[in-house]
Length: 354
Image (tube, rainbow, N blue to C red):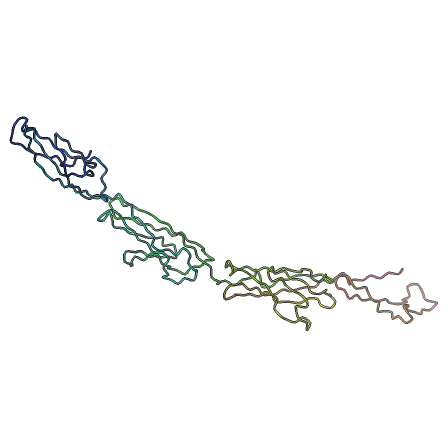
């Protein structure tokens, strides 16, 4: 319904011979007839369809004016309608290259993605500016001809952030700017840059003597900030000597679980404590390792009977003491002393006569 133009044809004749009707010429395309309406009496051309500058930026309309005489005569003109662009299209972002997975050791300036940004509008309405968040370890490079590049800007650390959602925002320069966004996900792949570690540098475990051979006595657990094969751990005991005997005669370890087992029956009276060095190693390339000390303390069990050391036994199992037949009550006959190889409460002795 929007007014375009009013045509004005004149005829020097009078009456019916001077009455003029307007119509589209035979050369007028069907597209023009869809987009414009022509009032046959007034010659007004108005918009009929939905104009789209991006489809047609101009239309050429052939108009015919015919008088009403018996031998009708006609005149013709061409109307050129230029369509003025308005900012009705948002920028379009098209990815041309994307590395959706990038290693955490990727150097700065590594290309993560390439994309183009275009706007179907013209002039300033079609000029586009793009940006990404400056809080990400990436930057936007617009120096490439006809392309934008997303590059690594800061060192990556998968253990800190394993994935990023990078939102590309493109805005045109129209009076009422239009914006479009496209989000790409970038996942950071792991490298073996973290050695496994224990929560503490020294562990202590207590084992009761007279234990069963093969019983588990302790368990060590390490942690690795990496993932996958880089975090697959193996445990071992480092070679050392305990009382001039290999440590492996005393203990063993499950390489997968870190559970430590006794390889012999411990005797507190023979060995009260010993220390071992355990190691954990990951399966990355190259492998990284860490060590930890484990103090094994043998606990005493009451497995030794007291031994009387005084008075000395002279005849078989009997000690003989001689006293005067005139001894008074309270006379010291003998002092009995005993020792116990156990320790602590197990070695505290009491004496009685029965």
